[in-house]
Amino acid sequence: MFAKVLIPIDSSEESRTIVRWAAGLAKATKAEITLLSVIDPEEFQIVEATAAGTLRRDATKEVIEEFVAKRKVELEIEAKELRTTGIGVGARVVAGAPAEMIVAEAKAIGVDLIAMSTRRESALARGILGSVTDRVLHSTAIPLLILQPEDITDESIGAGFIRHIVVPLDGSELSETAVGPATEIARATGAEIVFTEVVKLPIYGMDMGGVGFGAVHSAEAMDTQIQEEAAAEYLKAFVENAETAGIKARAEVRVGNPSIQIVDEVAADEGSIIVMATHGAGGIKRWVIGSVTDKAIRSAHRPVLVIPPQAA
View 1 (tube, helix red, strand yellow):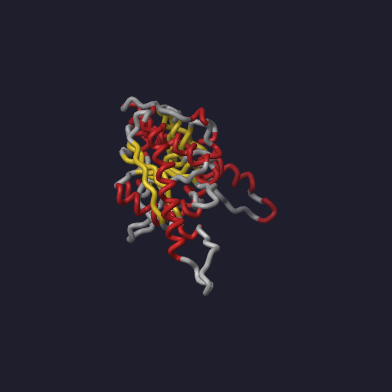
View 2 (cartoon, one colour):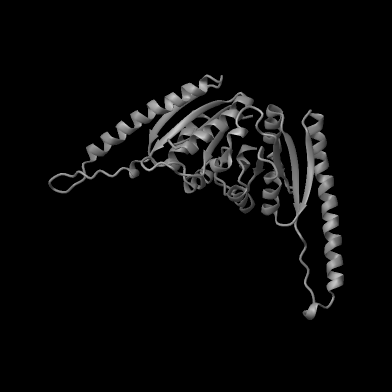
């Protein structure tokens, strides 16, 4: 289960929404939070130069140090407020390239979950851009909870705010590695797990002019029905295991494009999140996000917890 959560934030209101949302999950799971603010030196432009026209590097260093000190004070205030809710909260401010520093800090602290936004709002210190999120995704084996602040309302904040956990499965051992984390979250929050499998529509060729259309249509319908029945039987075991553990669960078989169907499933309720595994890159200890996972993150308008293979 997640015991330590790293939350990279900037000074934007969107970041504060993310903190409040993640704090609800941390409180439910009794996890500790570390707030992290990364100051990117490349964002600072010093206009004053020497008579020779060279950049005053010492001035740049002073400005960064001053900004880091100021941000530490601001972050500690936020941490202090969160501690009043009974959550263990730490605060760290570092300077460097955002993605690299997030990964390095996560490793140094020993966190088992990173929760971050895909948006940037800060004009001076770099916030968490989609590109930064992508680089973190491709650089760590730590599960990543990706939040979209514009789609999260205050009504979803607090312990028990998660009502539905959508777990996409496809019959592979990899996809099933998401079941464990989803089950633990459901146990902590009282949420319902929706085990989902998407059956792809079969594609058959036909003669020119549509000859044989009726036979093709009949074959497609039969093939789809067989796949749906097999998927329902496959998901049944997961539902039964969850219910045996005292967790509310149900199965949902959908037909069509996997990413679209997953998004449609999670969109039905504002209190929903997706917990899904993604494909690994192979021998090196990094992983590449799968196309279905990528589309879900960008289109779901709900939090997505991505489980890399190494986290299984």
